[in-house]
Length: 320
Image 1 (spheres, rainbow, N blue to C red):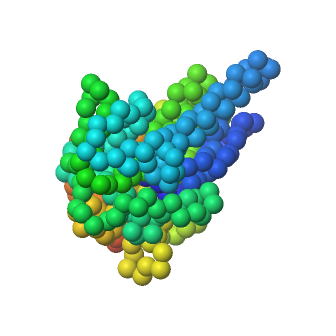
Image 2: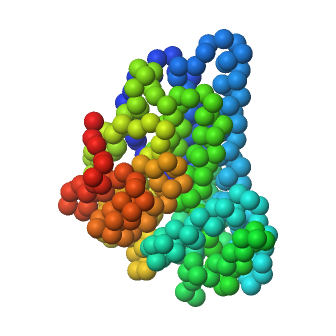
Image 3: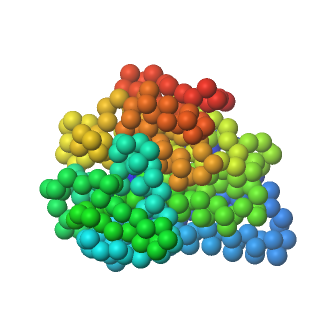
């Protein structure tokens, strides 16, 4: 999902680790590489891989952003009742989002874009410009109004709607960046708290990641060790609805039109960031019991925190 950067510090000490940070997709993306050959040729290989990795964030955003009037996603959403052939990237993002929506019976639903705009999430993070699509939040829509044709790689929107791929696109960008960095073996891609840790840290141990406490901004809830896996965390403290006093935030329950109250933080470890982010969002909406059941069904490690600050974890979640 699209959200402000989380403060999830990498607890491992990085010795002489090349590190680069850039503003991308509404957050700060940081790439770190450790343990690489220091020869000039190796440095060149490493630097080119890092540049290609950052480039994926721009490419995914140019295709999948609802905040860019010129994006392929916005062009798709300007159509209705017409089969539109999509690029492989956008088709895969929409296909994945609809598949998660179907499995969660709409707890996760990418057609909430107009409702998100109505809640105040309609400004470009780069310059604050108002980028409302013009799609009105009037007629009820759902993922069932998105018709996919796998063989033609096309999508037809049956009603006027605005797709929001925020809970898919950043994870997709991370996963594509990882493919560029995988030959380097030991690295981290951190996109505002949604991250992937490849290989090991500078001490040749699994990466240790601190997860922010949902009610104490400068404290950690816990730490977890991961290697060759993604970790995505979302909290109700991230992006609040402007001038709201009812606790409304960036996660929307498509069935109620309001923010969930049972869960205040979710952290999911998965083989890919796209899976961790999307299923973490679904679990946030479903609540602790159903959310954990979904994540256990997919054999993912997870930690959910409820409104009473009680942690609910999958059996294989291990604090360090």
